[in-house]
Length: 282
Image (tube, rainbow, N blue to C red; front, side, top):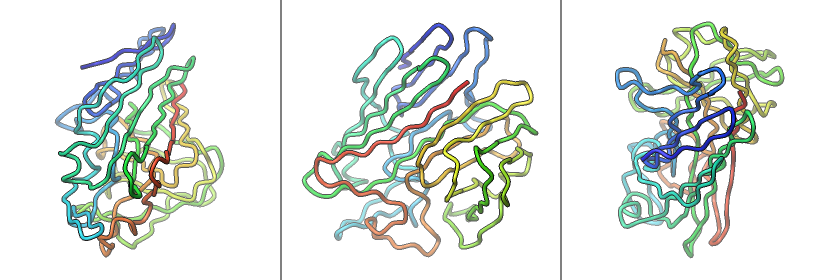
């Protein structure tokens, strides 16, 4: 079911399946900013990645003698979320553990995602709470895809020297190769072949935001804050780009299966909460 929030300028819809952003529509210019999904290219629009980002080696989660199978990007994007609060300009969805999730992921949790219109910006806030009586280990990330064209630019707030880790295209695991992306520069140009080797997986950014500068002037100023990883991805040559703040990352090809030792994993003691946000200004 789709839920709509609205102000004088924007109409935003969110699907309770996956709590996935469905549309960001500017009523004043009749402009749709979000990729609208195409099964022939990529059917997603803005999936939520939980409780892992990317893929575990062999899709296996091993923790305290438990051995679970957990699919790429986790189950959050393939789950029915419950609408918890709805106002004119904001809506919140929640997901909590169930017998089905405990088969894949042996932790108790409550996740909430709130979508809020703030003038000409959309703020999306994620919160994870440990509702169990043992430590909770998790990763979480966002994956919004914005419409663009070849030749559009991605410009960081500050000059950056960044590398991306190469991905095994068959297994979706990180390889040790580090490929230069920027050398004291601030701009990435979107080209037909920039994502031939899968996503750019960036870390160590000085900037807290990046702007999608479009030739048609329909820019998106995207704030990812303190996210330790920023994924940038699209199917090669497709007219969208995903800007993905990640609190977690794919396993390396030689990674450990012990989930609490996974690179980028987050830990919450019983009763503790974790939150992060992203914001898109138009």
